[in-house]
Image (cartoon, one colour):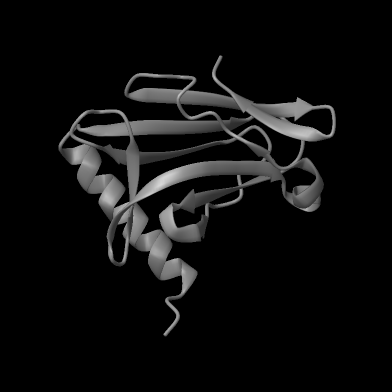
Length: 129
């Protein structure tokens, strides 16, 4: 039985809101400073992927991840419970496969991790300021 992506995204958002309420989450902000729409995919443990909403040019997408007890790793909620976020891949929406690149979530550090997404040659780079 396959679970529709919109159900998975809804569960991720519900868990993120619960994490915000307890102020134990890591808040992520991805700001698109390009002149094109960008698309990001969250890669969770066990090869589960979740498509995040497309981020229009000049816009910011925010979400929250729950922290582990040691504060080192972030988790996203899935229908079977929390799952580790292994990677966040972002690229230009209309040319995603050629422009996609990893986002170094640890680079920003702290509870509020802000990333500015811009083109770096043919690739999109989401970096901490």
